[in-house]
Length: 284
Image (tube, rainbow, N blue to C red):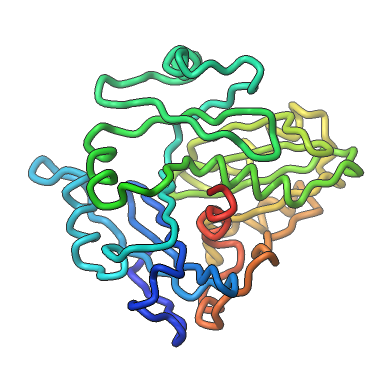
């Protein structure tokens, strides 16, 4: 994704103490949006792609250079949140969760490296905790530049946004998919409860289709009637939607959260893009 900046004319760099800053960090880039908390309007969205890490430059070094060159990232805000995009996370039911055993829970599903520490988000609306990891060097960098920011994993706003769509009357399963650069998050909900939450790596469209159909089969859901809601990085030039429609008839691209208003400048991007980032504020 190329660098871009969509800024509303009402954005005032001298009024950031009235704004909320949400930041998204992945190996491929840094994105952030700014919410005017007075009128609940998103007034900025910017994205910086990051080059590949090599033996001479670490990932935190690349992030530091990006943060230093953008004045908005160095201002004070009413509140700040940072979301880490990562394949590795695991959900733990709240009745079973004990902070002392965070590493133990995490190791049930993923390897834990020596330079990683386990973090936890309470999922609002679900009786569960989302466990994820952050490398020590990245943690130190975020503490340096955003000491008051709350750290999140992308699964947290993903599930919170799903709960917004769900009602107790939804007795049949609904599938939600959020697509990232090289993996995607998938959740199957019935009523207001998750029956499956997982992430899958992919290289091509066929991988996405395969794993979505796998989830349908595992849930014994009918592809001809089960709703599929898509969000995230969906390339309009790919044949993803066409391929999915061969098997799944009820497909919807997720709209933006009506709890907020959005600058007209954001019409330059599709509504299903950056869904987690725009909903991150509701997790704070």
